[in-house]
Amino acid sequence: MTTARSQLISIEATPYYHCVSRCVRRSFLCGYDVLTQTSYEHRRGWVEKRLQHIASVFCVDVCAYAIMSNHYHVVLHINKPKAHRLSNHDVIERWLTLHRAPVLIQRFLKHEALSKAEHSACLTIIKTWRERLCSISWFMRLLNQYIASKANQEDECTGHFWEGRFKSQALLDDKALAAAMTYVDLNPIRAGIAETPETSDYTSVKARIESLEQNQATAPYLFPFAGNPRNKMPEGLPFRLSDYLELVDWTGRQISEGKHHHIHSTQYPILERLGFSTACWLKICTSIEKGLLIGTPSSIQAILPKLNRKRCVGLQIP
Image 1 (cartoon, rainbow, N blue to C red):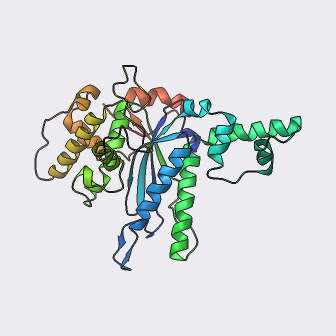
Image 2 (spheres, rainbow, N blue to C red):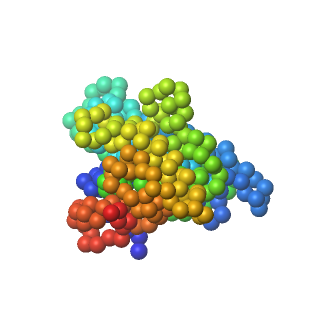
Image 3 (tube, helix red, strand yellow):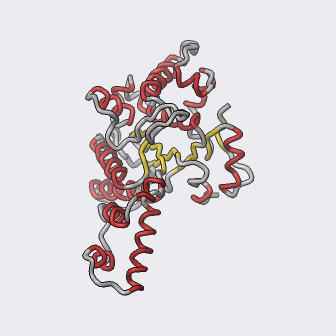
């Protein structure tokens, strides 16, 4: 039975979510179709560009992403405080970047004389838009609808392009967040289409590495790393970028070598800080898509009442 989205996404539970969308049947999001000898590689650019555009409009931050041949992954952060800080005109400007303006809102923007009821209706519309700007469901909807429309137009066909609703997993703590981001960034390496993180095209880890090489503080449209959450740091991910890149590189090498060699005992600072053993970490990073919730047992149990659930199958991280 399909689980209600309200029981999967709750800002009171956590602002971080891992989402996956897959194509229906044999449809190609990107990649090369050997059967028809057709390349869809250019569609990766569609997804990445649209993802960046929506992220620049919404108050939903992109922490990680990977665009594969028939699906894509994103790790998102709901930035509700940012949405609350927006003025009414900011909300309108952002929403109209992706939608047409109703007549009433057009009159509001032109400062035309409005009745009390019309002004109240405008404020109600703006409130709705403000809520949508920090909604993962609306974020994914605008991304998937756009890509489906372009793909069907190019393929000269109609009908469903996506398998169904996107899958979402709540990331309840720092351990779950680090594991999900690493899992997403290593998708091309596990699939055998890239050898290293820096050569993994259309991934967030490559975008972050390229920004480092250009001496940029952070990659455009990606949620920045803020460092140790115990300190007073700017808004961002609760890790250091250097630690995260070491973690991704180390994990990728262990996964590829694990088929023939033992797991090395090397641990990088972020592993020590989060209290992982190397064996436990590798197990998590190869099975992240199991379950609806990801976190420590205590995190999962604490959040069930907020999701109106008594029990829930989730990936428990020691």
